Image 1 (cartoon, rainbow, N blue to C red):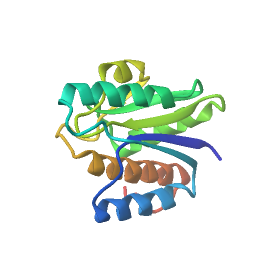
Image 2 (spheres, rainbow, N blue to C red):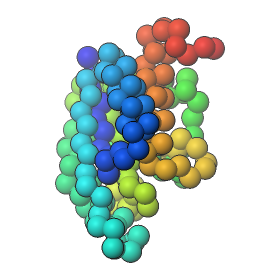
Image 3 (tube, rainbow, N blue to C red):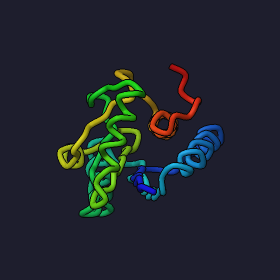
Image 4 (tube, rainbow, N blue to C red):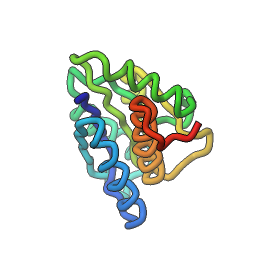
Length: 156
């Protein structure tokens, strides 16, 4: 079973997002071994630029040499669910690399983190709350895994 890693900034505060993430994490866990790291948000009193830098440094400390960094970024590459499934297959083929999906806090990711990414992926051209982005990413990864397994979840 291949492995997927996640590095998230901030705990999910809203119960409905927590429930949705738990739901898709459980489903995705049927197809992949999951490893999740949740980092603390930068202090609220800091200006946004400083928050991004601090959270970025925290993210970098959690990146492992075997991680293939995939950063979620509104300016990243957009793809369909079927395209994501094809990429997921390629990303999980190398046993020496682990796809590591990163979502920053409410102000996004530092340039340093984005520059480390092998892939910058966008879930939408619209700006999304990071809790919703986390939910959407988990659902889309579950959908991609279902497509690869021929499951009827994705209706084509």
